[in-house]
Length: 407
Image (cartoon, rainbow, N blue to C red; front, side, top):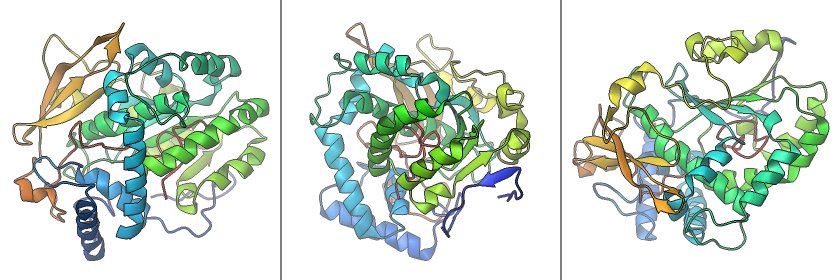
């Protein structure tokens, strides 16, 4: 990674954190120690009744490995975090939430948090953009009021706020749809290594100090839940348009995160935005608002790139990937994936096949679901695999889907 120095760009200090860039620590790129830890972790989960191997397994390897990376490859520590996440998911019926969430409610939630551009960075990692200025008091109040009504058939633990549970549907979308789709795109380095990260542009221009302060409690609660239950899905955060007072705001925000997460955050001055972004992304995949060539604005639907269009074989009248909750499910013994559109519209369930993808690197056998250091032997999740997103999704946690890395 290119390191920029000088006053033009301030990289938030990481307090000595050790960084390991993608694909280190990911499937196909594990050290002997990491491979052994992964085997021990899966064995421990199986003994505790939290994991069942098979074809498909109860949880996919990329999901399990995120928890192990978050806990620095200590199986016992990863087990604690994973078991707590399973309890949370069961208590709040997260999968029923995703399957039955009202599509309009889902789309309303998307407008308040980081949005997928439909493009990927130079390593194939999906690019999200988050414009904080849309989270004004009126928009947030209207959204929170809407979450008081029934928006899915999931029962909850009665402790987690509805507005945060709807946010979790977006994490499910990241881990169950966007990342598996990105993983099947082979126009990238290490094409057989699953993508479990996201790259995030966080635009904080036109945001007042009062607005930051009003969002503080929500941001903190969302960050804590996301860090706990959606670890290791963030690669880099680029903060753009920081006002003069942001150093004060950053002083209390950064205390919410561990040093490794902080080391992934870049605060860019205006004249450094394009030079730094083009280090990580092709200019054709950078929105015009930030100096690139992509004709995409914050409220637009994803601008799907040519590789996505190439690999998707549409069915049932679909010609593009739809709005609302969708996920990928292995079929034909894992040789293909089918995209299933779910959710409800005016109380009517939607469950339709949108398209299929012929996998470039299908699992060779059931045994290949065990850890492998050979590329091309990974498996993905099914709707019952409970893929879990991470607390680092789009952006400087300045609102929820953000800067936590689950460590």
